[in-house]
Image 1 (spheres, rainbow over the protein chains, first blue to last red):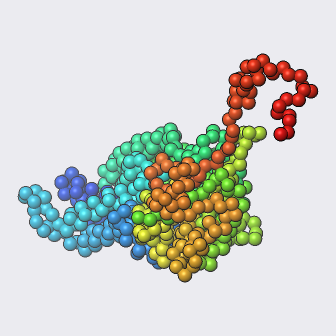
Image 2 (cartoon, one colour):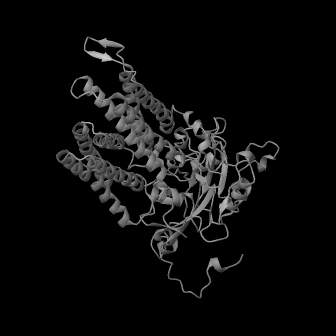
Image 3 (cartoon, one colour):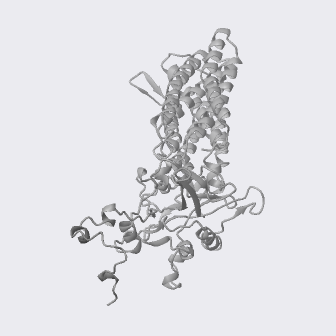
Length: 326
Length: 241
């Protein structure tokens, strides 16, 4: 498939945004359980939510470049019963609204306790909104990934591993950004977020690695034989019906050389997994304020490559009809 | 229920592209149009087509055979492109099973083209919407046309009659009979998309004659030991009665 930059930025940016929100809420829940020191509501959670909102907005903005008619994008909410794309279009703004609400509640300091559950759990507006937001964040990960995993014709994507990868890599980068944000603002949560970022990165490595291995051994269902219905071992296309290009030759081929393709794979494997882990570990020992930021930037760059490779790796069965230019 | 479809006879398709050009001519100026081109007369020409004819070579030289393969939307009975459309712009007509795109609702996300294993949807780069074969819906449903002309443009233009058109759910229709009696098959049946369009295979007519059938072992002349007659002697067979 042809990797479209609009979709690469959409999926990676909202992934970070969702992950960052989940990190902030995790931090809040931990401090509620007195496992972490409580943070300044407006400076930490308020500004953190704003950061998540900017990333989500950036992703949403990028997605419009994918559409031929962005002014009709509102129509995409119609078929939520059957289309994962439609579900994503509904849940993304709903999630953004929750992040906005969560940020406003914290920024305005509307965190007075509403009621206490069993004398131990003080519930305020931010806890409820944060819980709803977290559920939507996970729902959004599933919707985004299922857009790809749901297409059975693209066998490289048609696997639960796709959902695992989108979710884990999104959360990993979000926690990495939370660590960077904490380090930058001098909040003492770098080790907490950093540790979780490393854990999610490692689990992400396991699932992403598993999908790479799976795809390397994938046997495609369709051959030229069943594509045109001729039973012969040697079938060669002589003409594809036109002499220039067409939508079919542009949309479904990545167009990169085999060397580039391979290089991207190894590059993202280094940039997403070991390098950020090493940098965040170094930041832990040196207590650097900028190193976590570098770790996040490198991981995000790696994720852009990872997403490019994700698209480029998928082979569409229609390509069987477009094997030779003539 | 009616399911209109094409049956394409690969045995007689000569690869002339008449269906491609007549399709483009009719549809670029009709309900489904326009079908714009980019750089049509320059380097790297490109454009939107509903129908393509491809050519495959089967076998290794010198034992090769050429197959011309017309390819357009197969109007699947379980169209995978329809449920993925977020806006409902892609739909399958209830009354005749034709899969269509409502250009006014299409947002141009191209997701439907990913969900079509046959690669028969083509994005219109000028109008930024997805386009595909309509089975000439504006023609086949136009009751003002005489019945003989209520057929897709490609069917009417085919000089070798390689394209049959009709209702594949009616067991007695020309297309159903052709599929049943002439080995009609579907493309990529593995997916369960149930394409309505079928293809008729290339057929070779070979006469299988065994040597026994050329030389009669029970030749009465041999039986009666009369086979060795002198050649210049008239026999009864040489006499005109």
